Image (cartoon, rainbow, N blue to C red; front, side):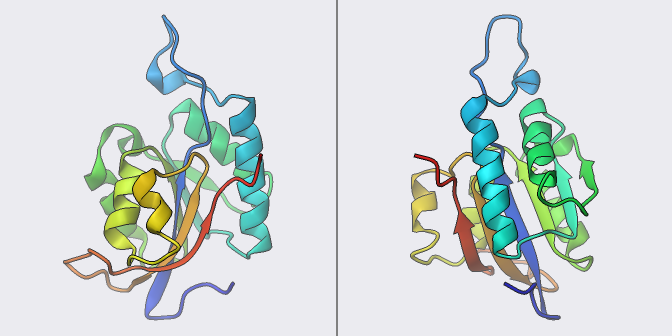
Length: 172
């Protein structure tokens, strides 16, 4: 699918792939992906590339599970140079809104982050459709929601985004 028009910009919201459960002595920040998570991330990256969903800008939480998800996506999106923002790990919803606001005029943006922020931003910004209805039951690990947002972003963002695709791992 082509990128958004001049009046809109494309946002991709990605929840990190499945990670191991925390263990004694392991910080939450350092939880790695498990084998299923690595397969999920590769699968979603391949589906996204087939759909033409390659971002111009990719910003990730620096938590290990997000960095590993990013690396697996970059195996497919070879031309993208990622950046990290610690606020996507520790800053809450405002950090996600700040990144979206700051990058709305610079091409398509992919954010790789955590729940509940990814789910909350998706449910807030995307118009309700059959496509987004499953998100009310939880944002899947490695899930990617593509939506077009108006440029400039309105002050009231609820339902301002047009959902284009929801890509989830197709693993069984």
